[in-house]
Length: 331
Image (cartoon, rainbow, N blue to C red):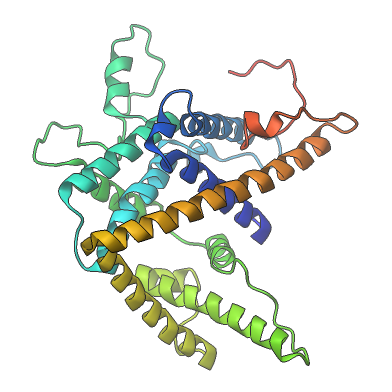
């Protein structure tokens, strides 16, 4: 499984892509930054897929696991970014967004998914027109679209939720590695507790540990006890610290519900919140671009020792695997 540092980098990269794609809808127009990044992520997926399938040692078991980063994998991830936020708002506020808002949001992610390579029913129709078909005969999942059997009463929201639930039942079988990755994700920022003579150091470590335990507790409340147990998340009665974290987590969820309802109901509050979030996203983008540029520069130095990398490397593809050029043809 990934290390905590790798998990952190992955989260930052995902945040960088999503922010650049959604900060302004015009960013997704052909040639703009969001559109370009989506195609770069698609190329990265192709590189990873090809690299895994060509491994000689520890060969990938296609019969058992399927093609790496396949249509189902990508569709599940797409639904995590489209359906899950809608469900999360309902969970926090106790009420649904309007049908128009949900449909618009699903349509936006359907387009992003299409850029990333998630097939839609339109892909089926265009491929069916080809005389020499080399693609799979399987129907496209089109997770953010409507059902493909022509049922007019089923919209994209119902289809998306049903598809996500089906995939959860099919894919969600946590193992030891799943538990490790989940703990890495929820433990970001945790500092090892050191019993220093300085009260500040001890308090800092205690508050950091309490914050992590709050995340565990909120996750348990969100996904339910059965899945939380499978991921080996701590139970509320295991220690005094965990009990305290559960109390804090409940308070945080109540505060989030109040915050969400105020944002939905008050135009003035929504305007203030929007401005603050927009500023925060812009600051995150600057931070991510700076850190990612340094990481790509370091990676290029390791990949091409003795050669100074091109200055425009990080601007070309921030998600790329940096490696020396080769003459091997990529299929």
